[in-house]
View 1 (cartoon, rainbow, N blue to C red):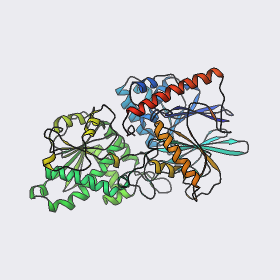
View 2: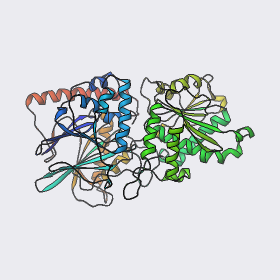
View 3: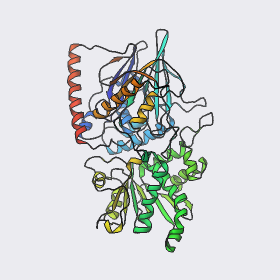
View 4: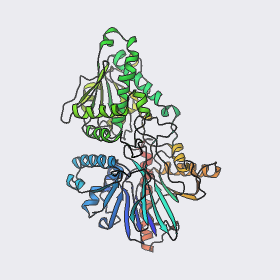
Length: 548
Protein backbone atom coordinates (compact mmCIF):
# COMPACT_ATOMS: atom_id res chain seq x y z
CA UNK A 1 0.00 0.00 0.00
CA UNK A 2 1.06 3.59 -0.66
CA UNK A 3 -0.48 6.00 1.81
CA UNK A 4 -0.29 9.77 1.94
CA UNK A 5 -0.60 12.45 4.60
CA UNK A 6 -0.51 16.20 3.97
CA UNK A 7 1.70 17.88 6.56
CA UNK A 8 1.95 21.46 5.24
CA UNK A 9 0.12 23.86 2.90
CA UNK A 10 -3.23 22.45 4.04
CA UNK A 11 -4.14 25.64 5.86
CA UNK A 12 -2.56 28.32 3.67
CA UNK A 13 -0.13 29.10 0.89
CA UNK A 14 3.18 28.07 2.42
CA UNK A 15 4.90 25.21 4.21
CA UNK A 16 4.39 22.65 1.43
CA UNK A 17 5.19 19.18 2.71
CA UNK A 18 3.57 15.82 1.91
CA UNK A 19 4.46 12.53 3.62
CA UNK A 20 4.19 9.21 1.77
CA UNK A 21 4.72 5.69 3.10
CA UNK A 22 4.99 2.62 0.86
CA UNK A 23 4.22 -0.07 3.37
CA UNK A 24 5.21 -3.07 1.19
CA UNK A 25 8.85 -1.89 1.08
CA UNK A 26 8.62 0.21 4.26
CA UNK A 27 9.84 3.25 2.32
CA UNK A 28 8.92 6.66 3.70
CA UNK A 29 9.59 9.87 1.81
CA UNK A 30 8.43 13.47 1.43
CA UNK A 31 7.46 15.65 -1.48
CA UNK A 32 8.91 19.05 -0.45
CA UNK A 33 9.73 20.21 3.05
CA UNK A 34 8.88 23.89 3.06
CA UNK A 35 8.95 26.69 5.57
CA UNK A 36 5.79 28.49 6.69
CA UNK A 37 6.05 32.17 5.80
CA UNK A 38 4.12 35.05 7.30
CA UNK A 39 3.35 36.25 10.79
CA UNK A 40 4.12 34.91 14.28
CA UNK A 41 1.73 31.98 13.83
CA UNK A 42 3.73 30.81 10.84
CA UNK A 43 6.97 31.17 12.78
CA UNK A 44 5.42 29.07 15.53
CA UNK A 45 4.46 26.39 12.98
CA UNK A 46 8.05 26.18 11.73
CA UNK A 47 9.27 25.17 15.19
CA UNK A 48 6.71 22.47 15.92
CA UNK A 49 7.73 18.80 15.97
CA UNK A 50 7.54 16.95 12.68
CA UNK A 51 4.75 14.32 12.66
CA UNK A 52 7.23 11.82 11.18
CA UNK A 53 10.62 10.57 12.33
CA UNK A 54 13.20 12.27 10.07
CA UNK A 55 15.68 9.40 10.46
CA UNK A 56 13.16 6.97 8.93
CA UNK A 57 12.73 8.98 5.74
CA UNK A 58 14.69 7.71 2.73
CA UNK A 59 14.05 10.57 0.31
CA UNK A 60 12.74 14.07 -0.21
CA UNK A 61 11.48 14.78 -3.72
CA UNK A 62 11.92 18.53 -4.19
CA UNK A 63 9.79 20.41 -6.72
CA UNK A 64 11.63 23.76 -6.69
CA UNK A 65 13.76 26.23 -4.74
CA UNK A 66 11.27 28.62 -3.17
CA UNK A 67 11.63 28.68 0.62
CA UNK A 68 8.02 27.64 1.21
CA UNK A 69 8.90 24.35 -0.52
CA UNK A 70 12.48 23.72 0.65
CA UNK A 71 13.01 25.86 3.76
CA UNK A 72 12.92 23.15 6.45
CA UNK A 73 15.35 20.75 4.76
CA UNK A 74 18.25 21.79 7.06
CA UNK A 75 16.11 21.26 10.14
CA UNK A 76 15.18 17.84 8.77
CA UNK A 77 18.91 17.04 8.54
CA UNK A 78 19.56 18.31 12.06
CA UNK A 79 16.87 16.02 13.41
CA UNK A 80 18.26 12.87 11.81
CA UNK A 81 17.44 12.75 8.10
CA UNK A 82 20.35 11.19 6.18
CA UNK A 83 18.52 10.27 2.99
CA UNK A 84 18.72 11.80 -0.48
CA UNK A 85 17.06 14.94 -1.79
CA UNK A 86 16.10 14.50 -5.44
CA UNK A 87 16.06 17.65 -7.58
CA UNK A 88 17.25 19.14 -10.84
CA UNK A 89 20.75 20.62 -10.89
CA UNK A 90 19.34 24.16 -11.12
CA UNK A 91 17.01 23.53 -8.18
CA UNK A 92 19.85 22.20 -6.06
CA UNK A 93 22.06 25.24 -6.71
CA UNK A 94 19.24 27.71 -6.17
CA UNK A 95 18.04 25.91 -3.04
CA UNK A 96 21.50 26.04 -1.47
CA UNK A 97 21.68 29.78 -2.13
CA UNK A 98 18.24 30.39 -0.65
CA UNK A 99 18.92 28.23 2.42
CA UNK A 100 22.32 29.78 3.10
CA UNK A 101 20.70 33.20 2.92
CA UNK A 102 17.93 32.05 5.28
CA UNK A 103 20.53 30.67 7.71
CA UNK A 104 22.22 34.07 7.74
CA UNK A 105 18.96 35.82 8.59
CA UNK A 106 17.47 33.46 11.19
CA UNK A 107 18.41 31.07 13.98
CA UNK A 108 16.29 28.19 12.72
CA UNK A 109 19.25 26.31 11.22
CA UNK A 110 22.92 26.79 10.41
CA UNK A 111 24.97 27.02 7.23
CA UNK A 112 26.65 23.76 8.26
CA UNK A 113 23.29 21.98 8.27
CA UNK A 114 22.56 23.36 4.81
CA UNK A 115 25.85 21.90 3.58
CA UNK A 116 24.99 18.51 5.13
CA UNK A 117 22.07 17.93 2.74
CA UNK A 118 22.75 14.94 0.47
CA UNK A 119 21.61 15.50 -3.10
CA UNK A 120 20.73 13.24 -6.00
CA UNK A 121 20.58 15.26 -9.22
CA UNK A 122 18.15 13.89 -11.78
CA UNK A 123 19.58 15.65 -14.84
CA UNK A 124 23.29 15.01 -14.34
CA UNK A 125 23.63 11.99 -16.63
CA UNK A 126 23.58 11.90 -20.42
CA UNK A 127 20.44 9.76 -20.46
CA UNK A 128 18.30 12.44 -18.85
CA UNK A 129 14.91 13.25 -20.28
CA UNK A 130 11.77 14.68 -18.76
CA UNK A 131 9.45 11.88 -17.64
CA UNK A 132 12.14 9.20 -17.26
CA UNK A 133 11.37 6.70 -14.48
CA UNK A 134 13.71 6.60 -11.47
CA UNK A 135 13.42 3.70 -9.00
CA UNK A 136 12.82 4.62 -5.36
CA UNK A 137 12.17 1.14 -3.92
CA UNK A 138 10.87 -2.25 -4.97
CA UNK A 139 7.59 -1.51 -6.70
CA UNK A 140 7.91 2.30 -6.43
CA UNK A 141 9.34 4.77 -8.95
CA UNK A 142 9.06 8.43 -9.82
CA UNK A 143 9.48 10.80 -12.76
CA UNK A 144 10.12 14.54 -13.03
CA UNK A 145 8.31 16.76 -15.54
CA UNK A 146 9.09 20.40 -16.34
CA UNK A 147 7.21 23.26 -14.72
CA UNK A 148 7.37 26.83 -15.99
CA UNK A 149 7.28 28.35 -12.49
CA UNK A 150 10.99 29.18 -12.00
CA UNK A 151 14.30 27.78 -13.22
CA UNK A 152 14.61 24.09 -12.33
CA UNK A 153 11.02 23.75 -11.13
CA UNK A 154 9.22 20.46 -11.73
CA UNK A 155 6.07 18.51 -11.14
CA UNK A 156 6.64 14.99 -9.82
CA UNK A 157 4.85 11.76 -10.66
CA UNK A 158 5.12 8.85 -8.21
CA UNK A 159 4.00 5.40 -9.38
CA UNK A 160 3.67 2.10 -7.53
CA UNK A 161 2.45 -1.44 -8.08
CA UNK A 162 -0.96 -2.57 -6.83
CA UNK A 163 -1.29 -6.25 -7.56
CA UNK A 164 -0.61 -6.73 -11.26
CA UNK A 165 -1.37 -3.13 -12.22
CA UNK A 166 0.26 0.26 -11.61
CA UNK A 167 -1.10 3.41 -10.03
CA UNK A 168 0.34 6.92 -9.98
CA UNK A 169 -0.04 10.30 -8.28
CA UNK A 170 1.21 13.61 -9.65
CA UNK A 171 2.32 16.50 -7.43
CA UNK A 172 2.03 19.84 -9.20
CA UNK A 173 4.47 21.84 -7.07
CA UNK A 174 3.82 25.45 -8.05
CA UNK A 175 2.39 25.73 -11.55
CA UNK A 176 3.80 28.41 -13.81
CA UNK A 177 2.07 30.58 -16.41
CA UNK A 178 3.83 29.56 -19.60
CA UNK A 179 2.00 27.53 -22.21
CA UNK A 180 2.89 26.29 -25.69
CA UNK A 181 0.38 28.78 -27.08
CA UNK A 182 1.57 31.76 -25.02
CA UNK A 183 4.89 31.72 -23.15
CA UNK A 184 4.48 35.39 -22.32
CA UNK A 185 6.96 35.86 -19.47
CA UNK A 186 10.60 36.37 -20.45
CA UNK A 187 12.53 33.30 -19.32
CA UNK A 188 10.74 29.98 -19.07
CA UNK A 189 9.36 27.70 -21.75
CA UNK A 190 5.97 26.03 -21.31
CA UNK A 191 5.25 23.62 -18.47
CA UNK A 192 4.27 20.00 -18.97
CA UNK A 193 1.11 18.24 -17.77
CA UNK A 194 0.41 15.17 -15.61
CA UNK A 195 0.56 11.85 -17.43
CA UNK A 196 -2.70 10.97 -19.15
CA UNK A 197 -3.23 7.81 -17.08
CA UNK A 198 -2.49 9.24 -13.64
CA UNK A 199 -4.87 8.22 -10.85
CA UNK A 200 -4.41 11.21 -8.54
CA UNK A 201 -3.33 14.82 -9.03
CA UNK A 202 -2.30 17.01 -6.11
CA UNK A 203 -2.71 20.58 -7.31
CA UNK A 204 -1.81 23.95 -5.81
CA UNK A 205 -4.54 26.60 -5.64
CA UNK A 206 -2.73 29.89 -5.01
CA UNK A 207 -4.75 31.61 -7.76
CA UNK A 208 -7.57 29.07 -7.67
CA UNK A 209 -10.22 31.78 -7.59
CA UNK A 210 -8.75 34.26 -10.06
CA UNK A 211 -8.72 34.72 -13.78
CA UNK A 212 -5.88 36.85 -15.06
CA UNK A 213 -6.82 39.64 -17.46
CA UNK A 214 -5.83 39.00 -21.08
CA UNK A 215 -3.77 42.19 -21.14
CA UNK A 216 -1.57 40.78 -18.37
CA UNK A 217 -0.84 37.71 -20.50
CA UNK A 218 0.56 39.77 -23.37
CA UNK A 219 4.34 40.02 -23.51
CA UNK A 220 4.28 42.85 -26.03
CA UNK A 221 1.93 44.90 -23.87
CA UNK A 222 4.11 44.29 -20.79
CA UNK A 223 7.22 45.46 -22.63
CA UNK A 224 5.37 48.45 -24.10
CA UNK A 225 4.05 49.55 -20.71
CA UNK A 226 7.46 49.16 -19.09
CA UNK A 227 9.02 51.15 -21.91
CA UNK A 228 6.43 53.90 -21.48
CA UNK A 229 7.13 54.22 -17.74
CA UNK A 230 10.91 54.23 -18.15
CA UNK A 231 10.93 56.62 -21.11
CA UNK A 232 8.49 59.00 -19.42
CA UNK A 233 10.53 59.03 -16.21
CA UNK A 234 13.96 59.46 -17.78
CA UNK A 235 13.18 61.83 -20.65
CA UNK A 236 9.99 63.67 -19.68
CA UNK A 237 10.29 64.00 -15.91
CA UNK A 238 14.09 63.90 -15.90
CA UNK A 239 14.11 61.38 -13.04
CA UNK A 240 15.29 57.87 -12.22
CA UNK A 241 13.56 54.48 -12.09
CA UNK A 242 13.70 52.14 -9.09
CA UNK A 243 12.36 48.58 -9.39
CA UNK A 244 12.25 46.60 -6.10
CA UNK A 245 12.51 42.88 -6.89
CA UNK A 246 12.74 39.46 -5.30
CA UNK A 247 16.18 37.99 -5.87
CA UNK A 248 15.00 34.62 -7.20
CA UNK A 249 13.55 34.73 -10.72
CA UNK A 250 11.89 38.16 -10.62
CA UNK A 251 15.25 39.97 -10.74
CA UNK A 252 16.32 37.87 -13.73
CA UNK A 253 13.02 38.47 -15.55
CA UNK A 254 13.31 42.22 -15.03
CA UNK A 255 16.93 42.13 -16.13
CA UNK A 256 15.82 40.70 -19.48
CA UNK A 257 13.00 43.23 -19.83
CA UNK A 258 15.31 46.17 -19.10
CA UNK A 259 17.86 44.70 -21.52
CA UNK A 260 15.09 44.64 -24.14
CA UNK A 261 14.29 48.30 -23.45
CA UNK A 262 17.91 49.39 -23.86
CA UNK A 263 18.65 47.14 -26.82
CA UNK A 264 15.39 47.40 -28.80
CA UNK A 265 13.09 50.17 -27.53
CA UNK A 266 15.55 52.94 -26.72
CA UNK A 267 17.33 53.08 -30.11
CA UNK A 268 13.94 53.09 -31.85
CA UNK A 269 12.69 56.08 -29.86
CA UNK A 270 15.85 58.19 -29.73
CA UNK A 271 14.94 60.16 -32.86
CA UNK A 272 12.08 61.78 -30.92
CA UNK A 273 14.25 62.83 -27.99
CA UNK A 274 15.98 66.13 -27.34
CA UNK A 275 19.52 66.40 -28.67
CA UNK A 276 21.13 65.95 -25.23
CA UNK A 277 19.03 62.88 -24.56
CA UNK A 278 19.93 61.36 -27.93
CA UNK A 279 23.61 61.39 -27.01
CA UNK A 280 23.06 60.15 -23.47
CA UNK A 281 24.14 56.62 -22.57
CA UNK A 282 21.74 54.91 -20.14
CA UNK A 283 23.01 52.94 -17.15
CA UNK A 284 20.81 50.17 -15.72
CA UNK A 285 22.10 48.59 -12.52
CA UNK A 286 21.14 45.43 -10.63
CA UNK A 287 21.84 45.78 -6.89
CA UNK A 288 20.87 42.51 -5.21
CA UNK A 289 23.57 40.48 -3.41
CA UNK A 290 21.56 37.26 -3.41
CA UNK A 291 20.19 38.13 -6.85
CA UNK A 292 23.75 38.26 -8.19
CA UNK A 293 24.41 34.70 -7.02
CA UNK A 294 21.06 33.57 -8.42
CA UNK A 295 21.89 35.18 -11.76
CA UNK A 296 25.03 33.04 -11.87
CA UNK A 297 22.85 29.92 -11.65
CA UNK A 298 20.64 31.27 -14.43
CA UNK A 299 23.76 31.90 -16.52
CA UNK A 300 24.79 28.28 -15.93
CA UNK A 301 21.48 26.57 -16.64
CA UNK A 302 18.87 28.73 -18.40
CA UNK A 303 20.23 27.87 -21.85
CA UNK A 304 21.22 24.27 -21.07
CA UNK A 305 19.96 21.53 -23.37
CA UNK A 306 18.70 17.98 -22.98
CA UNK A 307 20.46 15.13 -24.83
CA UNK A 308 17.87 15.51 -27.62
CA UNK A 309 19.19 19.03 -28.29
CA UNK A 310 16.13 20.88 -26.98
CA UNK A 311 16.40 23.61 -24.37
CA UNK A 312 15.49 22.38 -20.91
CA UNK A 313 14.13 25.72 -19.77
CA UNK A 314 14.71 28.61 -22.16
CA UNK A 315 11.74 30.35 -23.73
CA UNK A 316 13.02 30.83 -27.28
CA UNK A 317 10.70 33.82 -27.72
CA UNK A 318 13.25 35.65 -25.56
CA UNK A 319 15.82 35.18 -28.33
CA UNK A 320 13.39 36.68 -30.84
CA UNK A 321 12.47 39.56 -28.54
CA UNK A 322 16.10 40.50 -27.89
CA UNK A 323 17.32 39.62 -31.40
CA UNK A 324 20.01 37.51 -29.70
CA UNK A 325 21.05 33.87 -29.89
CA UNK A 326 20.94 31.82 -26.69
CA UNK A 327 24.73 31.99 -26.51
CA UNK A 328 24.52 35.78 -26.41
CA UNK A 329 21.97 35.71 -23.58
CA UNK A 330 24.12 33.30 -21.59
CA UNK A 331 27.25 35.40 -22.21
CA UNK A 332 25.43 38.56 -21.10
CA UNK A 333 24.39 36.99 -17.80
CA UNK A 334 27.84 35.52 -17.27
CA UNK A 335 29.62 38.80 -17.99
CA UNK A 336 27.34 40.69 -15.63
CA UNK A 337 28.20 38.34 -12.78
CA UNK A 338 31.92 38.06 -13.52
CA UNK A 339 32.77 41.57 -14.68
CA UNK A 340 29.88 43.65 -13.31
CA UNK A 341 29.16 45.40 -16.61
CA UNK A 342 27.99 44.68 -20.15
CA UNK A 343 27.77 47.27 -22.91
CA UNK A 344 24.48 46.64 -24.65
CA UNK A 345 24.99 49.19 -27.43
CA UNK A 346 25.78 52.88 -27.82
CA UNK A 347 22.40 53.41 -26.16
CA UNK A 348 23.44 52.07 -22.79
CA UNK A 349 24.88 49.36 -20.57
CA UNK A 350 23.89 46.91 -17.85
CA UNK A 351 25.74 46.77 -14.56
CA UNK A 352 25.58 44.52 -11.53
CA UNK A 353 26.75 45.73 -8.12
CA UNK A 354 29.09 43.38 -6.29
CA UNK A 355 28.33 42.38 -2.67
CA UNK A 356 29.20 44.88 0.08
CA UNK A 357 29.39 47.71 -2.46
CA UNK A 358 27.58 50.97 -1.80
CA UNK A 359 24.50 52.01 -3.74
CA UNK A 360 24.96 53.38 -7.26
CA UNK A 361 22.96 56.60 -7.33
CA UNK A 362 24.42 57.56 -10.71
CA UNK A 363 22.45 54.82 -12.48
CA UNK A 364 19.30 55.72 -14.40
CA UNK A 365 17.47 52.46 -13.70
CA UNK A 366 18.03 50.27 -10.64
CA UNK A 367 16.66 46.80 -9.94
CA UNK A 368 17.20 46.32 -6.21
CA UNK A 369 16.39 43.81 -3.48
CA UNK A 370 14.40 43.24 -1.41
CA UNK A 371 11.08 42.97 -3.19
CA UNK A 372 8.92 44.23 -0.30
CA UNK A 373 11.20 47.24 0.31
CA UNK A 374 11.79 46.60 4.03
CA UNK A 375 15.45 45.64 3.84
CA UNK A 376 18.36 45.25 1.47
CA UNK A 377 19.84 47.82 -0.93
CA UNK A 378 16.40 49.06 -2.01
CA UNK A 379 16.06 50.87 1.33
CA UNK A 380 18.92 53.27 0.57
CA UNK A 381 17.55 53.97 -2.91
CA UNK A 382 14.12 54.76 -1.47
CA UNK A 383 15.71 57.06 1.11
CA UNK A 384 17.58 58.92 -1.66
CA UNK A 385 15.03 58.81 -4.50
CA UNK A 386 11.68 58.26 -2.79
CA UNK A 387 10.94 61.91 -2.05
CA UNK A 388 11.46 63.28 -5.56
CA UNK A 389 8.36 63.33 -7.81
CA UNK A 390 10.59 63.16 -10.89
CA UNK A 391 11.48 59.57 -9.93
CA UNK A 392 9.35 56.45 -10.36
CA UNK A 393 9.12 53.26 -8.31
CA UNK A 394 7.81 50.27 -10.31
CA UNK A 395 6.31 47.48 -8.19
CA UNK A 396 6.38 44.03 -9.77
CA UNK A 397 5.38 41.63 -6.99
CA UNK A 398 3.39 40.84 -3.88
CA UNK A 399 3.63 43.27 -0.95
CA UNK A 400 2.68 41.84 2.45
CA UNK A 401 0.52 43.81 4.85
CA UNK A 402 2.60 46.18 6.96
CA UNK A 403 5.57 46.25 4.59
CA UNK A 404 7.00 49.42 3.06
CA UNK A 405 6.05 47.98 -0.31
CA UNK A 406 2.40 47.71 0.77
CA UNK A 407 2.51 51.37 1.78
CA UNK A 408 3.83 52.25 -1.67
CA UNK A 409 1.22 50.03 -3.32
CA UNK A 410 -1.59 51.99 -1.67
CA UNK A 411 -0.71 55.09 -3.69
CA UNK A 412 0.25 53.35 -6.92
CA UNK A 413 -1.25 53.86 -10.37
CA UNK A 414 -1.00 51.73 -13.49
CA UNK A 415 0.14 54.42 -15.92
CA UNK A 416 2.46 57.45 -15.66
CA UNK A 417 0.83 60.69 -14.48
CA UNK A 418 1.29 64.17 -15.98
CA UNK A 419 3.88 66.28 -14.19
CA UNK A 420 1.30 68.71 -12.83
CA UNK A 421 -0.62 65.91 -11.08
CA UNK A 422 2.35 64.51 -9.16
CA UNK A 423 2.43 64.96 -5.40
CA UNK A 424 5.35 67.08 -4.18
CA UNK A 425 7.83 65.20 -2.05
CA UNK A 426 6.84 61.75 -3.31
CA UNK A 427 8.17 59.58 -6.10
CA UNK A 428 5.56 58.28 -8.48
CA UNK A 429 4.58 54.62 -7.93
CA UNK A 430 3.48 52.38 -10.80
CA UNK A 431 2.04 48.92 -10.14
CA UNK A 432 3.02 46.36 -12.81
CA UNK A 433 2.81 43.31 -10.54
CA UNK A 434 -0.05 41.73 -12.49
CA UNK A 435 2.26 41.30 -15.50
CA UNK A 436 4.87 39.27 -13.63
CA UNK A 437 3.09 36.68 -11.48
CA UNK A 438 4.66 33.23 -11.86
CA UNK A 439 1.53 31.37 -10.67
CA UNK A 440 -1.09 29.90 -12.98
CA UNK A 441 -4.55 31.43 -12.65
CA UNK A 442 -7.78 29.43 -12.43
CA UNK A 443 -8.07 28.87 -16.19
CA UNK A 444 -4.47 27.69 -16.42
CA UNK A 445 -4.95 25.41 -13.41
CA UNK A 446 -7.96 23.86 -15.13
CA UNK A 447 -5.99 23.34 -18.34
CA UNK A 448 -3.16 21.79 -16.29
CA UNK A 449 -5.59 19.30 -14.77
CA UNK A 450 -7.69 18.45 -17.83
CA UNK A 451 -5.16 18.51 -20.68
CA UNK A 452 -3.64 15.17 -21.67
CA UNK A 453 -1.54 16.48 -24.56
CA UNK A 454 -3.24 14.22 -27.08
CA UNK A 455 -2.83 10.98 -25.14
CA UNK A 456 -6.24 9.41 -24.81
CA UNK A 457 -7.19 7.64 -21.58
CA UNK A 458 -10.53 6.57 -20.13
CA UNK A 459 -9.23 6.33 -16.56
CA UNK A 460 -10.84 8.63 -14.01
CA UNK A 461 -8.50 10.77 -11.95
CA UNK A 462 -9.06 12.14 -8.46
CA UNK A 463 -7.89 15.64 -7.55
CA UNK A 464 -6.59 16.76 -4.16
CA UNK A 465 -6.32 20.54 -3.68
CA UNK A 466 -3.73 22.13 -1.37
CA UNK A 467 -1.47 25.21 -1.13
CA UNK A 468 -4.05 27.98 -1.08
CA UNK A 469 -6.40 30.01 1.08
CA UNK A 470 -9.73 28.37 1.95
CA UNK A 471 -11.49 30.66 -0.52
CA UNK A 472 -9.14 29.85 -3.40
CA UNK A 473 -9.44 26.10 -2.72
CA UNK A 474 -13.23 26.08 -2.69
CA UNK A 475 -13.48 28.24 -5.81
CA UNK A 476 -11.04 25.99 -7.67
CA UNK A 477 -12.95 22.89 -6.54
CA UNK A 478 -16.18 24.34 -7.91
CA UNK A 479 -14.52 25.29 -11.19
CA UNK A 480 -13.06 21.78 -11.60
CA UNK A 481 -16.43 20.16 -10.97
CA UNK A 482 -18.12 22.49 -13.44
CA UNK A 483 -15.66 21.65 -16.20
CA UNK A 484 -15.67 17.93 -15.37
CA UNK A 485 -19.46 17.86 -15.76
CA UNK A 486 -19.19 19.37 -19.25
CA UNK A 487 -17.14 16.37 -20.45
CA UNK A 488 -15.36 18.32 -23.16
CA UNK A 489 -13.75 16.31 -25.94
CA UNK A 490 -10.18 15.25 -25.11
CA UNK A 491 -10.44 16.41 -21.49
CA UNK A 492 -9.14 14.18 -18.73
CA UNK A 493 -11.91 12.39 -16.83
CA UNK A 494 -12.01 13.64 -13.24
CA UNK A 495 -14.33 11.74 -10.91
CA UNK A 496 -13.67 13.34 -7.54
CA UNK A 497 -12.31 16.63 -6.20
CA UNK A 498 -11.49 17.14 -2.53
CA UNK A 499 -9.62 19.57 -0.29
CA UNK A 500 -6.47 17.98 1.14
CA UNK A 501 -6.45 17.52 4.91
CA UNK A 502 -4.18 15.97 7.54
CA UNK A 503 -5.68 12.46 7.58
CA UNK A 504 -3.90 9.43 6.16
CA UNK A 505 -5.27 8.38 2.78
CA UNK A 506 -4.84 4.90 1.31
CA UNK A 507 -3.95 5.59 -2.32
CA UNK A 508 -4.49 1.95 -3.29
CA UNK A 509 -8.18 2.18 -2.46
CA UNK A 510 -8.77 5.92 -2.21
CA UNK A 511 -10.17 5.50 1.29
CA UNK A 512 -9.31 7.48 4.42
CA UNK A 513 -7.42 5.36 6.91
CA UNK A 514 -9.30 5.19 10.19
CA UNK A 515 -7.36 6.36 13.21
CA UNK A 516 -7.89 5.43 16.84
CA UNK A 517 -10.62 7.46 18.63
CA UNK A 518 -7.97 9.49 20.46
CA UNK A 519 -6.12 10.21 17.23
CA UNK A 520 -9.35 11.20 15.49
CA UNK A 521 -10.31 13.62 18.25
CA UNK A 522 -6.85 15.17 18.20
CA UNK A 523 -6.85 15.46 14.42
CA UNK A 524 -10.29 17.07 14.45
CA UNK A 525 -9.18 19.57 17.07
CA UNK A 526 -6.05 20.40 15.09
CA UNK A 527 -7.98 20.72 11.84
CA UNK A 528 -10.61 22.93 13.44
CA UNK A 529 -7.92 25.23 14.85
CA UNK A 530 -6.08 25.34 11.55
CA UNK A 531 -9.22 26.19 9.62
CA UNK A 532 -10.13 28.97 12.05
CA UNK A 533 -6.63 30.43 11.81
CA UNK A 534 -6.65 30.13 8.03
CA UNK A 535 -10.03 31.85 7.74
CA UNK A 536 -8.85 34.66 10.01
CA UNK A 537 -5.68 35.04 7.94
CA UNK A 538 -7.74 34.96 4.74
CA UNK A 539 -9.88 37.83 6.02
CA UNK A 540 -6.93 39.95 7.13
CA UNK A 541 -4.54 39.55 4.22
CA UNK A 542 -4.68 41.32 0.87
CA UNK A 543 -5.92 39.68 -2.31
CA UNK A 544 -2.41 38.77 -3.46
CA UNK A 545 -0.54 35.58 -2.41
CA UNK A 546 2.93 35.47 -0.86
CA UNK A 547 5.87 35.83 -3.26
CA UNK A 548 6.85 32.81 -5.26
